[in-house]
Amino acid sequence: MIKVIVAGAAGRMGQRIIHMVDAHPGLELAAAFETAGHPAIGRDAGAMSGQADTGVLITSGLESAIDRGDVVIDFTFHTASVHFAQIAATHGKAMVIGTTGLSADELARIGEFAAHFPCVQSPNMAVGVNVLFKLVEKTAAILGDTYDVEIVEAHHRMKKDAPSGTALKLGQMAAVGLGRDLAEVGVMERNGIIGERTNTEIGIQTVRGGDIVGEHTVYFAGAGERLELVHRATNRDNFARGAALAAAWVAARPNGMYTMFDVLGLDSL
Image: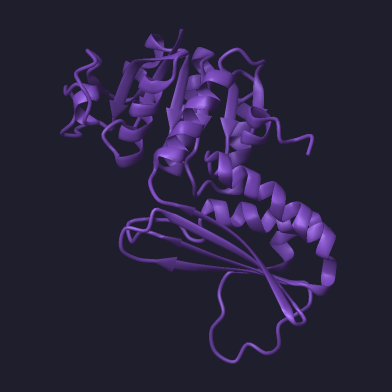
């Protein structure tokens, strides 16, 4: 049985991850933690997530929990994720990171730490979204330069980063399919007299409001027709379920960085 440590156990994602760890036959909740001073510290992690008591009490900080488990699942905040990765590397524990908003420098640091531990990192752990990533790459390659690529993402009003990590990954996959660099052709905002759209740009636009869990639409707009690829999340369970799958997969892997493509066997497609 693989023992799991859940970061941010009292948060919305943390609670759903606890549910999915409990539902997975190969995983066991071994520890759960929150930031120092959080009111949930000392409470039972199962009860906190709406389940029966598990006997696992929420503790303060990863250092208090790191020796209890095999894999850390983290969906917290980008700066915290880098710190947790350093601790996991020091202790040789595997990690699953679904945190969004990680900068290129932060991802590079996690990649350096991954020389000392196995880590699955993805901006979105949902199985359907990762299939969408591949579909966008393939569709872009097939349709080519005569179709304009536009991405619209919508999330709840509490989300802190924009565009979403998923939207940026969709843009990157489209760019790969088209032989472009998203850093050069990505357009994240349009306002005022912007002039005619260029042939190479990939637009990514953001909507924030209410309790929208997550919606992503990729438009391939051509002359006289439009193809749309859409993913809508109606709850957080798909993300948490994917994280549990990743935790079960990564525990026995060699040190290094992995993605959900590796977990789901999509890299060969």
